[in-house]
Image 1 (tube, rainbow, N blue to C red):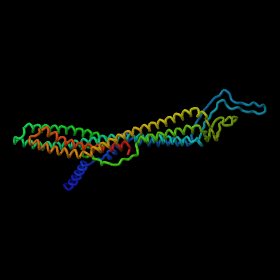
Image 2 (spheres, rainbow, N blue to C red):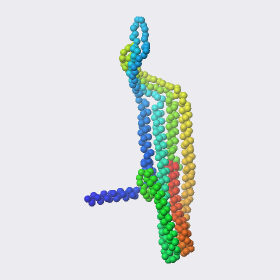
Image 3 (tube, helix red, strand yellow):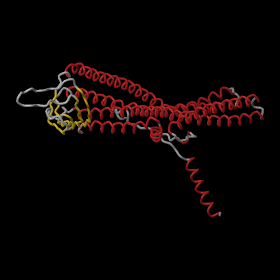
Length: 418
């Protein structure tokens, strides 16, 4: 029995360890969030709706069949009175059952244009869907990097607590030797507890970010260490590839197709028709009995009434096209302002990072000097704590600047659509 249980135990252990060590990248979170978002289900519905609509439009080429039947009674009928020839007039009760078949030969290109309009309408729906789904990336950026920022603060705070504990140990030793007051040790312990409380607050913030991220991607992220810090990219793509631009282009295509349809509706139409039936009388009015009949031919039709409203319809479409151009121009203007702000922020962060290491090095020297001064009774414990905190704050600033630069680059990628 054991020889079967052992491999099973090993498999379960490996699976558990694999699950615990699973890491998420920002790109994997984008993909998971998009696939998990309820709105993604609309994509299949849009495709199906477009397929059904195109199929219905295509059936406009099929013969249109109409079945009809009628029975009538009329107060009078046509009669011819010729003394020599006896012509029997038709009955006042008349009956007819017919089948009418009409088929388009030339519709002015209306059906072809209707198919283009349907495809453009479907493309617009898809473009709007992609735009809505794209906005999820910004939400993921906020949650993903928000958790990383807090995690950096937590790690730095842990280092500060370790530093404080080491300092407290030295303080306690000097208290035993009578070099310092016992209250200094109490003050150190109070500062350690304060920083541990701050850890609790930071950890709660991390858990909040991770729980929301888990809800977005549909997978449990229970530790910020499972989030891979992306590499900093030095180059930026200058081309704008935002999904909003596809929405504007799709709107323009739809309105242009509708504009073309207005002209096509005013063209002449040519169709073939046929009618077959059985009735009394048939086509021969003077044959007063039930008989089969048929008639067929071509029909040309043209209605000038299409011109009554075509001018205003065209002006309306042209107005819609101008409105789309204004919306696109406004979007690009605002997008450019965002990029200017992001570039300015990047330059500021790069300057910060250039001096961060120097600041840390200098503050480390000041801290070392402060420790020596405290041990010699030159400065107070509060003075020493300030210098210790200053070093840890400088280190934290460097971590924050690096992460903010990373956030800036991913925000720029979102702004550019790349």
